Image 1 (cartoon, one colour):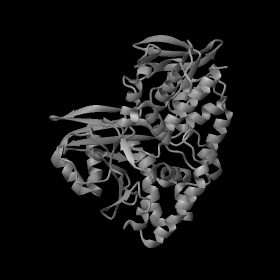
Image 2 (cartoon, rainbow, N blue to C red):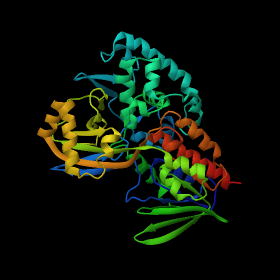
Image 3 (cartoon, rainbow, N blue to C red):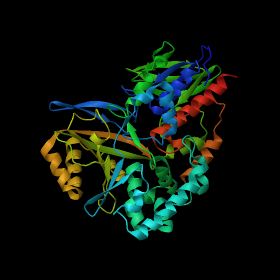
Image 4 (cartoon, helix red, strand yellow):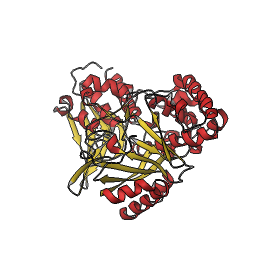
Length: 459
């Protein structure tokens, strides 16, 4: 983008990575930006915060906790802003549990699939079909708009695995990837979702930031361009209405019981789809129905701060559905990079499939912690004992809308939705529901929304 002198103001609703990136790109263009965030912290599902335990301080990621060098739009933004120097390496291994043994696969060496003891030789040969299908699918995969994937969205991940792969690959690769990424089993996820995971994950190293991945939105907001008088950030700002008027848009929001109206030349609405559906009255009935029906899985997860780190080298251990019905991944977050836990201490997070979390939305924290340890004891008793012996703190985090879990046929719905949107509207949408539910996709949709707004306002 090329900066220009202007007094035009753009309002951005939501300070997750989509909204923060949109705000940054619009500031680069020279527009005044007002960023409205309903929480008392920026970053949304890509944010981190400090938690004390005993004499120690831990840093927890609220939502997203892992980044890949395959995230090319994010890498480009980091390099452009000088923030690439903040990138730090972390573990590149994902473990998969089978019959009580953890088998580790490297993200940077896809050939580990051919060497691992996780799968037999028949399955390894079948895995070549997955690599071929991924190569054929690449033209349909996009960080900012996955509507082209409608043409290959013909079945669930489970149906795909049974048709093109085999049962062991379904049980110990496809299903664990679905549950780890989407918190839902393979029969509830489009096969495009599995191809997207492979496309975005394998063949590239992982990276992080000191203190958590949530540092990225904070870094962007701290850039001189974003700290200028042309940028205004309002926290605890609950937006209730975004509508077009004769002079642009006006946004109604509330804080401390007082309603306020913000006027702007355009607006980017960067919140989860079901929330956007209730904010923008100019949406058509079909557009609103699409956004309202988007299925985000629930996430109630538990993080333990430990006086002693675990011996695990992987950043996480996936727990296949065959091994446990509820627990889907154990994150060893001290392997995700520095700043998460004090030196030689541990930080372990237990993440569950959506049905377990949905049943505990309103359950008190102490019960959730007990239930999580019960599940862990059933599948990894040694780790449960280690937590029991070295535990300094336990923190429960809850998300009603954690990850978009798109079922088979969902990309056709997306294509119809995106084709109905007006790229010349002063109200533009951004969010993971345009693509694949990751931080990088959210970032890319924020950039795309900013480009559409800039094109509109420059005429």
